[in-house]
Image (cartoon, rainbow, N blue to C red; front, top):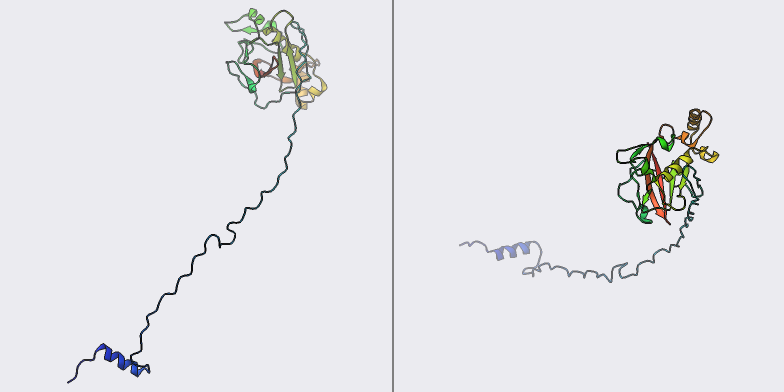
Length: 252
């Protein structure tokens, strides 16, 4: 009688046929022990002090020169001196319309509000080639308004820069009264009606100089260099210092 072979009898027969000793122990594979992970103390570059910061020497900034105050000499109506000792206040913002409220430019000095005949847009129409008697006023003002205070609070002196500082008009009242609107306008006209100095003339292109000379008929004045823009468009306050109000003349 034949019985089916068991797995043990079959494996013993196959092992014997392969040349292996019977009943050899079977060893199962085991995993190798894992290596410990390196800590931060064992990593290269860790726990090292940072490299020192590069040394930079201090550089002293140049100190801007102090701007001397203009020599505000005594002026009478239509008889004004000009002062060109202070440097030109160059501006690149063109013709701007200042606010109607009191201005305190650059945070210097007390707020100053110009008279409506002087502040832009002014309540009068005046060509800078004409005398002040030819000014035309709005309905709320008249020629008597020219004798009113030029600014509030009252300014002891008003310096007007013209054409970005090429020309400068300085207005100061006669003794005994406040600086009036007519004092400021008269100072501007007196500055523009004089002959330009060679250094002032050199600030304009040659073609402008030729056109101004032809326009003036040989008697060249500073206002002739303005071309068609000869209408008074008001004053813009730039800053206030030491009781002096500095303005820029606007043209139209």
